[in-house]
Image (cartoon, rainbow, N blue to C red; front, side, top):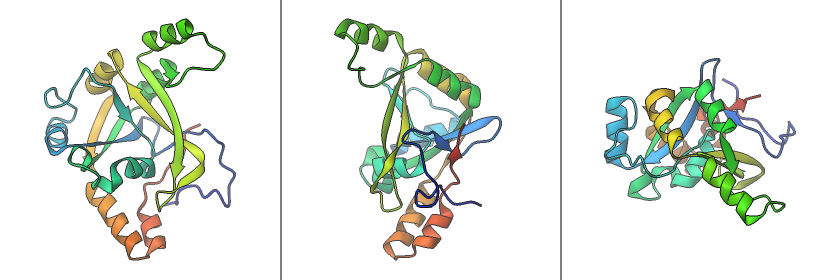
Amino acid sequence: MHQQLDPATAATPLRQIRAVYDDRTIRVYQAYSDAIADSALANGTFVSPPFKMERMTWIKPSFLWMMYRAGWGLKDESQKRILAIDITREGFEWALAHSCLSHADPSMSKEEWEHLKNSAPVRIQWDPERDLMLQPLPYRAIQIGLSKEAVQLYINEWICGISEVTRLALEIRALIQEGRLDEAKAKLPVEQPLW
């Protein structure tokens, strides 16, 4: 397996989608409570309840950004279980095509921004990618917020499989705490540029 892109050896664009993917699927991550994780793993998708259909749900292709957000699954009870969700490439591309940024472009009027925001079922946010120590890197990782019909498509059509990676997250964290960084890096999912 190859290791993740190393900014010291390869110039990484400021905004680039990096993920585990193949010709058919792309992997995204989410962190949930026991109730939602158990239900999703048992059903092969998210089921309401306990999953809340009316809320925006954020999917993240970056494993390390997910670890930062969820504190390796130790941050709080609502994010203690890390799930890897394989979704169709078509679904992922639909989400990007039906998205708007989570913040208004400075050139837009308030009315233009409200119209765009209300008509787009998907939000895109670019946040600093994280290194093994969860420190910010000089390039960004994408987060994709699904709402309205995008959530319905996600749970009913796009999801091809759900697996749990909480144990992997805790193994990597333990190696980092022991100073075994090369071993920790070797366990990271292989994320490659999507395009």
